[in-house]
Image (tube, rainbow, N blue to C red; front, side, top):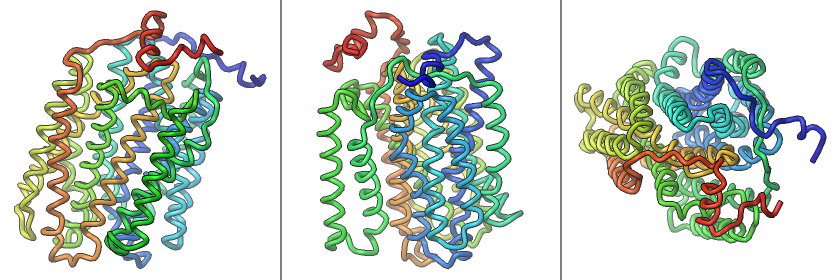
Length: 491
């Protein structure tokens, strides 16, 4: 172990209540930025396309280059933070994110914009799991931690829903490049706040890098989403598509094989034998796929088919942001008191209802019906985030908090990437007049995702059980459940 790493405490200092919640606020600010950047570009895609002279398929890569880089590297970033210091990696992520945002704002072509968005995703990967790890480390009390995770998840969920509204306003006032310029002052403020308020910490026992696993995971995700995006253009049975299927399956199989054989894997696949954890991860994929399908189809339909401005299209999602804002804190409190089942049932019901409202979408669908659908989806999204995040993180010991946050966040971003690819595939090459009809399978998918959340609710425990992994008995039971010994015994 190097001299530098020994200076970093394995667990942060005991903080006052005020300091703990200040740390949460700082991390939440950064996560708000990450969430906004996941969806803020959506509302500007038609304007970006006209400005750079590209179509819908090229524009999908503007969104998915960010989400794929983010999803692919979250696990590695969480492990690096546990090893080298969470605050240190968090600050590096802020710097990379800020510089790449400036590159996006100055991009002269689609290729440069896509590349800069990918680097932006690299920076974001150092923020999302690390922010949650910092929050978990600062909140030793299980009940307080549950409330904090609820607030954290609420802020992230709100940022995803608010992205189109913020983006529409910025584009109307300053043009599409302003959605990237706006990141600069927020990054500067976050860097100052992190330096002043956030203590350094790392895991008691860090893991060795898993480069084969990282390479295979990245390949599987990128190829899978790439085939979804390019499939309508090259043909689903073309040699290129068939080769993509084979490569994605081979990479996924290789990833599973490598991870099962490593003593310190990138992703501990044994965790998926725990029903609450597995259901939370699948629920996160489903939830974010539904949200991104809804946001992209809404943007294209309102601007291309109905001729609305980006500001008007963004404003139309205000009911969605309102629903997420009002219900996310309620969901966090409800999860802390009664467990995840009840808020997940509400989330699934409202999301499915919102999707059903849009299945019969036409060129002249009444605006009140559109707003009602967006409100229902926003309510569902608001109720879902806190129980999913809390259930997933509760399935791991605090010493693996970076990895816990990374797994959940990876699931979110995979869902986002798949949602964008599916929605873009439905809209690519379709005339504006036919977009409403072409988008109906997408709204059926949103409905199906809502129904799947009902299944996740049934798999979740009806009562909240806070497990303290500081207890030797609890920790030993956890490792026995995975068929492994406590790594401290073999260190």
